[in-house]
Amino acid sequence: MLTLSASLIHRSMNPKPRIRTESETMSLRPSTLTVLAIVTFILLSGCISPYHMEIAQGNIITQDMLDQLRPGMTRSQVRFILGTPMVSDRFHADRWDYYYSLQKSTETTPQTRHVTVNFKNDLLANVEGTLNNKPSDTSDASKNSDKP
Image (cartoon, rainbow, N blue to C red; front, side):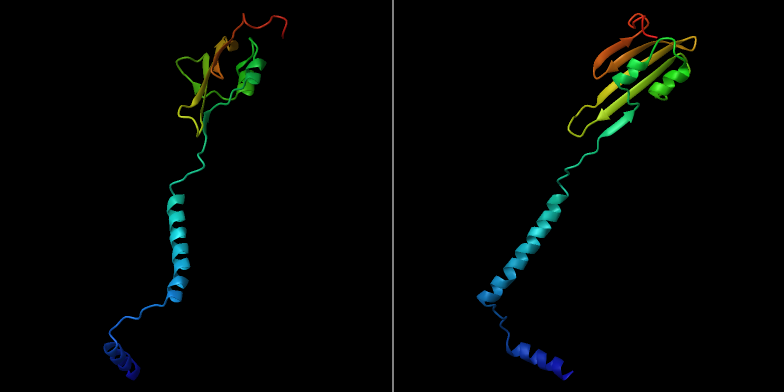
């Protein structure tokens, strides 16, 4: 208790705040600048987002897959090559639609592909659609007759 009252008496007798010397001030500046730099870096790092996820949806269909299709294949053979269709419509039981969309982080519009597989009597009749933004049509007439 005596030390507390002695401290209060000392403060009341010396009302001037202590002035720091130049060397004491210079020793505080690097730490203040360091803290300021760290805080600025943390705040700005939230604004900069270097990674954007690419979003792929649907069935990936390649030209090699389409080249394997032959008229007269069964539904199970087509499903084995292309995979399960994205859209299988009850009202169009003989039509399978394969959609693919890829949204890249650097592009504003997604790349889209749409391939339609048509069956007649449960056998492949023709394949229509776009692949790599080029229309493709692989029907009975477009296939070579010498290939099995």
